[in-house]
Length: 207
Length: 69
Image 1 (cartoon, rainbow over the protein chains, first blue to last red):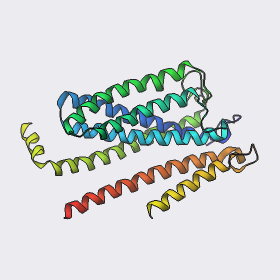
Image 2: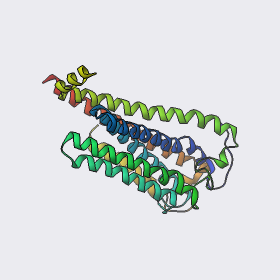
Image 3: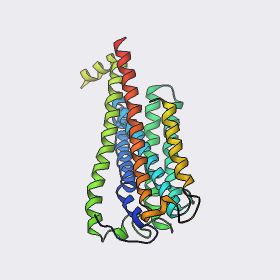
Image 4: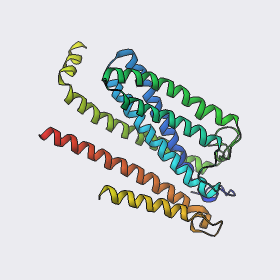
């Protein structure tokens, strides 16, 4: 597939198919976690909490890969792995917010309390991520490609060959992320049902 | 493969990547239109997902062991 010939970017323009979908996957996974956190707060069902936690953990995993690939790329195009670019800083901040979520959970002993507090925290974390990832990067100057407007597209958008690959890559990566998350959810549900056989029967009979 | 071996390989990859970046222009990572940056990025994603799978595998084996006993 031919790609546009641009200075500095050169062949690394192809990272659009790998680095950018990592962030899309992360956003989708965090959105799922947000949905299940609200669902948990409405129903109080601990299984929804398991969904929320595993979606968040997988989202954190994808954010780490996204940041690592971004840093590797920046090392050879911007000349440094970390140059305190607004996009890097905002991403780092939202990642720290989600790291704090894991720390918060491991700090609480009681399951119900842990689930409730972390669900509330997760709602706020998601609400913080939106301005950090979507709004601030669009308001300030940045070194990132496609700056001034949409963080990732703009200059590539006109190229139909790149679009063909990119639009295929994005759902592929998102589904991979969701698949990993559901594997973890299934694992944790089996564990949960094994540890609380009585509670599970009780919940089933209540429905 | 043991955990230590995996970590060593990972660290070697990182040092190789960073060491290649010290000089301007004429290094491998910037040759051929920086195509090796794309290769590194792909390798990172592959290594990341693979490490995650190994981690999941271990968790599942632990659960299986618990079930047996």
